[in-house]
Image (cartoon, rainbow, N blue to C red; front, side, top):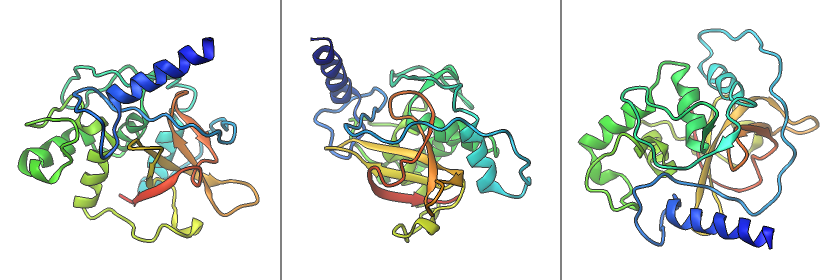
Amino acid sequence: MKLLQVLTVILITAFVLGCGVNPPTPSLAAHTEIAPIQIAPTISAPTRRTISASDIGARIALAAEDQVGVTTIYDPQYVKLGYPNGDVPIERGTCTDVVVRAFRSIGVDLQVRVREDMQKNFSMYPRDWGLNAPDPNIDHRRVQNLTKYFERMGKQIREVSADSSFQPGDVVAWQLSGWMQHIGIVALDRVPGTNHPYMIHNIGAGAQKEDALRSFTIIGHYRW
């Protein structure tokens, strides 16, 4: 009975807060991503290493890893944020918050960047949530908006088939079941005995470092 109650809550949350390309009903609330499959156990963040200031990708990857063990709660609730640099409490968030926080470490505020581009090019962005104007509280916290922004800025990597094409700090977007999508960041190191990297993402248990690159269908690959 307890499991049934948990599954019911997940399904309700996905229905109301879902971020897929074709959600069942428009919503102003934040997105969510719940995957029905199991992935490898989380890997603890490594000891901090020295990163060159010019290595943008490594800085993004390290900033993502720094969230492991800090952001421990998955919370997709719509929240009124400050602007710029608005954020929910660091101990909570969703998959997009991992990306937003990591990019702020290199001086890129995706809340501002997405809002400014949506103000000028609103018709170019997904209309899945029934919005008639940009909303700086939530736009940058939706997977489709982030991937659209990266595409529009020319950050998309077309080759996504080879493991070696993924570099630290790259952003990866996945399609989950149905219309839900998910997003994460390529970590600094690779899974032992393989050529594919660990990923940093939050899919329900806070920020995690996991062998998750091939756990879902990849639909986008971006490099700043």
